[in-house]
Image (tube, rainbow, N blue to C red):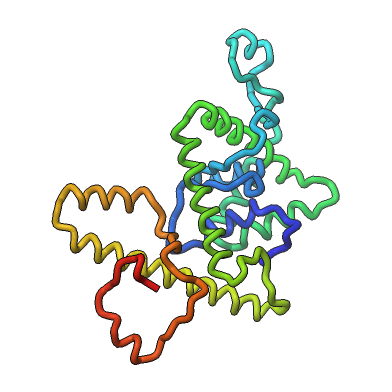
Length: 266
């Protein structure tokens, strides 16, 4: 847990680097999950950072070339400022040491960036990271404007994130957007219970679809069902009565062989 006043961007790197289950080579966030320094760090860590940027018309593009060269080439999208290449070159060894520290998990990215942001005057290493990140961000914006498939992929990924957030709220009674518990231990218990219920629903969805695939004999129908499963999320809960009463006694659990159709399920 961290303060709501902090930017999420450095914690995104923590999650990516310390996830031993899913190794991601591309990651999408909304506008609160990125910064130019994080663009730089993610690129050097081998992760393609693909955020959904708000207000693209207000984003600043950076270039190496002079304004005269830009005018001569007649680019439709023109840069606004120049990259501070000298600063990047002078701090390159320090940048590589910082990335190696994150890669080797000697410390977390959030701790490093919190320390760099703690100086009264912006640290030279942080300014160098930002300067390098401005190059990566500018290239990404140009790709984002030119590539429809990239925009659709980012939107689809973030739609799943928003679906997961809605799933979390719906599972909690009253669909709250904040913890009702005051103590940290109680909050952790509430979060663990919420996660257990969500995982149970997702597990049931997988079991039901596996059972459904096993009963389909027509090859065409099976392929159509597989395509539908591949293009959708397992985060579906409309078929579950979240405010119902559940009986987990041995008598009721004994009659659990097979899976009932979704509309007759709990």
